[in-house]
Each structure stands twice: as structure tokens, then as C-alpha cells.
Image: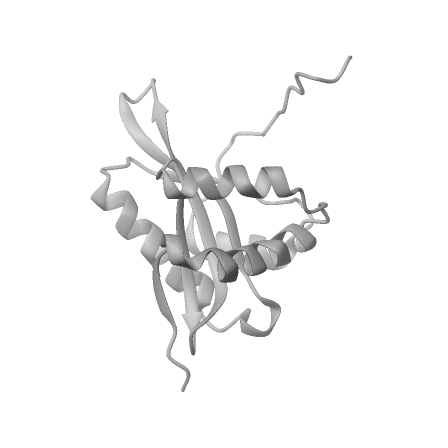
Length: 150
């Protein structure tokens, strides 16, 4: 049986992280933007965004990016799972579960009230996973694009 380890990212992990993150960018049908990736890496190193990676035989196979948010209504800190990605050959093998368990540990360590996230409406595999581990909220997500004329 393959041993999967999960840990927080370190400054020495850039090459493997960027390779894995590029896979996520492709999965999301986005274009690689070096400036955006550099900015994210800086946020990771400054702990403005948290990253855990899943590793098998020294290779990164999954990642979770999260951040801390304020909940004014609750007067508490909360967590937001921004990205959860597992390379295709390891999907369905418990990697996402391990990344979520690590995120739950982070949430407890930082005293978050809850963790929220969103997923694409047609990402049925992810939605099935999310339905097993969390409850769907009543909230819809809206986005106000600042730099686009309406």
C-alpha cells in the first residue's frame, strides 16, 4: 500500500508546488499567469494563504489552499477553502480526505468557527465528495467584477 503524507508547504517546495498548481490551473481551464502564480507563492510564504500538500514517494499529488476570514455576524474567525486539487491518478484514493483532515486540524489550531468553500456546479465528482463531508448551505455565490463595465 502506498503511504500518503500531508504537510504544510515550505519555501523549498516551489518547483513541485508550481508543477502541481499548474495542473490545477489547467483543470480549471485557466491560462497560466506567472505574475498571479508569483503573487500566490508570496502569499503562501507570508502565511496570508495556507497550503497543505499530499505527497507520495516524494512527489506532490494534491494540494489545498485556504485562508482565514472574519465573520462579523459571529464575531469569530472562519476558514475558506480556496482550492482543493488531486492529480487524476490519485483521485478516489483518499487523498482529498487527508487534505481535508489536515485543513480541519488547521481550523482547530486557529480556532475557526467553520470552513466554507464553493465548487463548480458541473463538477459532479467534487460535489459528491463535498456532500459526504459537509452540509450544503442556503447561500448562492455572486461576483461583482470591478474592472468590467456593466
